[in-house]
Length: 182
Image 1 (cartoon, rainbow, N blue to C red):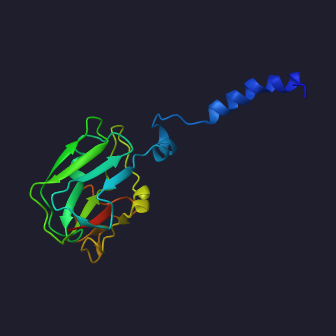
Image 2: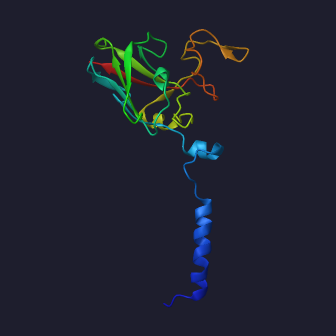
Image 3: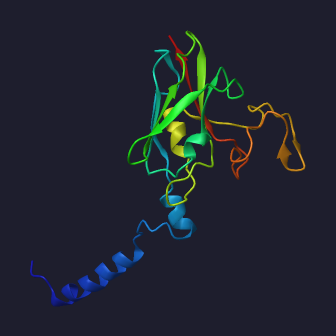
């Protein structure tokens, strides 16, 4: 079938239209921020894992390089999201995409632990994390009730809250992943 000259003339126009309608990773504007938001790519131990070695680290891999200080917004708790905070050393990979939490002492045996991620985690471009993909890895959104709050007063949750950076615009308090030691 012969190629018609008229169709060939339209190819540059179609290519220009396609190029104008595609996104770049500039992080400019709300649409780009939503599309290019960082997310949790993996977590070890995986949520709901049992029999985890008490001396095993918790390793979180993010889709983007994360901003300095974000390790303060990832907390390991004993028992529940309101349980005691476990002292851990936080170390970033050279490219700031992998955070390793190494408990300063071996975890207790046959005990449930909770990894809590703040909704305020940001990548190096300042974009807030999208925690939605974490639900496909067994993560659970944290409600005010899970944090020990019984009600809101003047738009603020009561006792049991973790402080600044832990409440998202949608009213949740980040996401948790659980595991149980051997």
